View 1: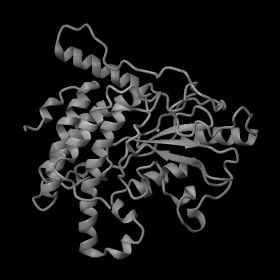
View 2: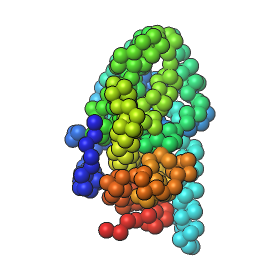
View 3: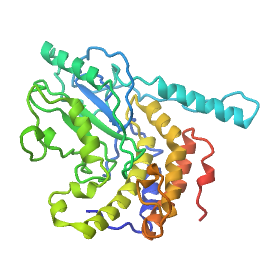
View 4: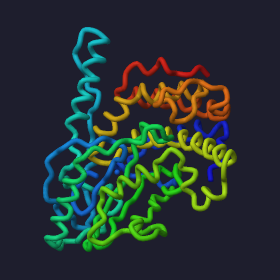
Length: 356
């Protein structure tokens, strides 16, 4: 379980992340300290975003070889010739919104060199027609809305997963890797990228809880991640905790855990914004620029005593709610969030800055 945060934890994390701004790492690659674009056999999934309907294509099959392709980059805040600051801000916001709305949730790409499962493909062999048809069917199913986890310590966050469909899929489950940034913000999401879920056969389960050959789907996996993992009381995801910690004691520990998790979620926002998965740069920037004020407003409310997740339900400050330690921890994160959101195009964020 998480230990309580020390006063310098957030500042230390931000300083550590800043050190990598000048390091020549490919987009989406994690530093050694220790998301579904559908490029081929492998895909990257960004959780907690409502899906839109887009055309899909038959996936190409990757060859396991070294890639000597320059990392993709995106200009998100170009100079706009306008006569006033408000006009410039409106034009920038409109441009970001257009890019976000036009972002393809399913697409074919040639460069997937930052994918965790890059060498787990068919390696030059053509996949069976049954496998290809299954993947196409999966894409059709995934062209549906998947609601984000409002009311949880993960609200407004963006969480990246790499997915690999093995040659014998759907007889066996897909492989899923989570980009943690070295942070463990759920008992089921390890800091080494492992996703612990019975549906993936990475945890114990009974009957339909496990992967059912030819019947289970990737949609079930994503829904399970959102509903069973990124839930409002992740403390009880830890085995036996639901029976070990009952009543008031369990609620107290669950509340403290949610506070710690929200701070880690804020750190994950900064990590993801600075190191987005390749081809997802515009989506990541658009997501956080469009939600910057919502996130910062929530932080302000939590600093005033609102309990984690309750702001989405109209929560009001309560001296008996958020702990003083949590209020201070969020306060230490705010200026870093403001700087990063502003750096990538969000406007009018300085109003949320906290005086030192």
